[in-house]
Image (cartoon, rainbow, N blue to C red; front, side, top):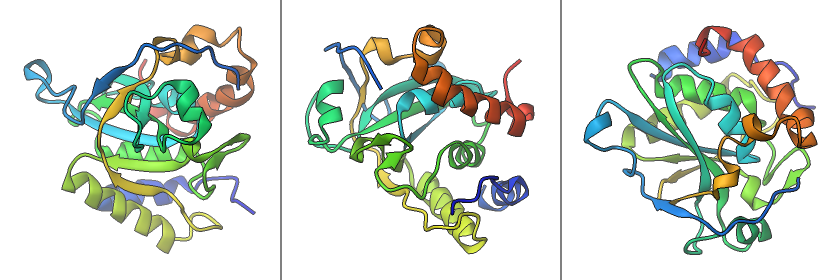
Length: 220
């Protein structure tokens, strides 16, 4: 059985050593792994994670100090300009993902990894709870050798420490083309919490867990 409580002391130690109803919309934007690194934010970096419905990860990551923007989108597949409906078919190969633009002087990559592995179950293959399919897989899309090394070290430490009862299945892949999801997916929880039961049933508990576990990392 999956451990219900994530050992926070183990996660903090790792940080130190590792330095569903949705409306269709066809508007998509394409960004590469360098898309948000312009002259006005040279002190920013980008992290890209997938772990179930992107509404969940977007909601939690956006609440962290040092995170400027979280963009829900699709990556890891082969189909050009995929729509949400196409990704949901499972045939494009894309994962629902989030691209996190953050200030590494305030929140580092390993802290993001800590929150990521706490807020979803990395031992579930191609699913998170009732969200089932390859588009809901757990994955880290790295944009540099440093990110790859950090993610590998983090996963290895979790495995050695037996933090989870089952094997971690999180994929580790280089970041290719990242497609922004349709506009109505962006900031979805904040815009639709009271109207969508998925938000209250699935995302609300994650937000509560985030506040309880990482209150010191959250924006005011």
